[in-house]
Length: 147
View 1 (spheres, one colour):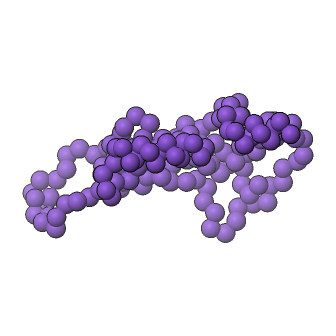
View 2: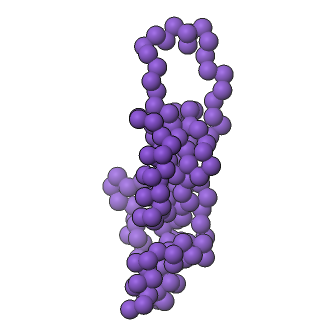
View 3: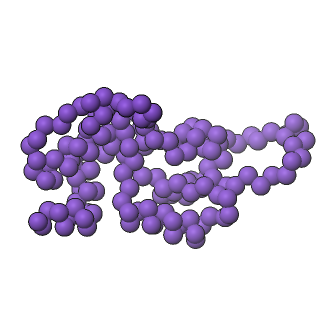
């Protein structure tokens, strides 16, 4: 692994499809839709996989690679300013304002969402047992374990 403390969102193919279906049903053209997925560190993910497959081989840490990020960001600070919390999802409405910004010089937006950024470092972080539970739900993991 490159860096054990890196965090990444954990999302199955089924959850990704659920996001797409939800977006078709609840978004307007140009909206950004984000699922509130949990995350874990790369070290936790590696440990969970080793425990599931009863592997005892050592994991070598090779260090962070050029351009690699420590965490993933799904919503930036600017996007969070207008994000609508829909329970398991965030919707950032498309900005369809006209170019007449005169009213914003007189009357600014009073409300700003308290969320400042949604990334894999500030979402729910799974521990090894939670990660294993999530991985064991995946059909391809179940198939590998049957071999």
